[in-house]
Structure formats: C-alpha cells, structure tokens
Image 1 (cartoon, rainbow, N blue to C red):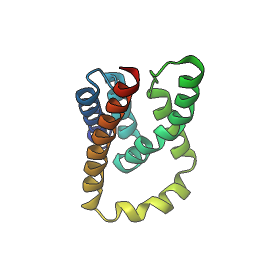
Image 2 (tube, rainbow, N blue to C red):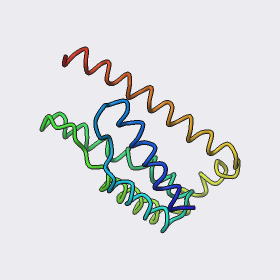
Image 3 (cartoon, helix red, strand yellow):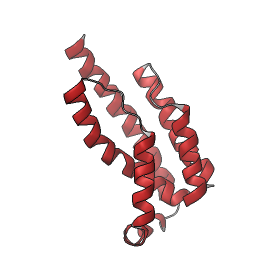
Image 4 (cartoon, rainbow, N blue to C red):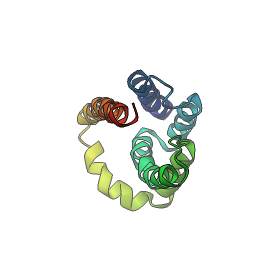
Length: 134
C-alpha cells in the first residue's frame, strides 16, 4: 500500500503538472523514490513526507531563483530530507497527525482536493508568468 500510495501521489502530480505547465513537472526518478519511501515507511508517513518536502524546497527554491535565476529544483533531495525528519521526529509528528488519519475515508478526499487545488494554482502561475515574461 505504501508503494502504491507513494508512487501514485507523485505520478498524479507528474501528470497534472505536465498537463498544466506543458513540460515535465516531475521526473520518473521522483516517482520511484517516493514509491521506495512509501514501501519503507508506509502510506500514512509517505503522505506526510510528500507534504513536508516542499517546505524545505521552498526555502532553497526561492534562494535559487533570486541568486541564479534558475527555476529547476530537484525534488528528490527534499523528499529524502523530509523522510529523515519524519523518521527522527516520528513520535511528535504522529501524535499530531493520527487524528487526521483516524478519519479514514476523508483522507483520500483531502488528497484529491489538494490535487485539484494544485492544478488551479499551477494554472494561475502559468497565467501570471505569461503576463510578465511573455
């Protein structure tokens, strides 16, 4: 279940991102890495890793865009970093998150809502970028 959940969520992001941005949004290596992480830590922890990784990526990404004008950010290192943080701080993170996962059927609905929201936000980003870059 962890393998399917981890690989599946990144695969969905890859499909949606590529469709909206009209270029590859995530590589297949990210899909395989997340599938491996899901196999190792399970589907619940894998979802948490997936949503923790952008926090570190955001800080590094902003610095990279400002300093080097490069918008390509490898996601794999941040998936690994988020997995490490989750493994080291599992007890307090799970104490906070177990109530969310205890809701059961609502978890897939929240993930689906996040994917729809991501498509909308990426579409908005494309419009803003095209308006200023041309």
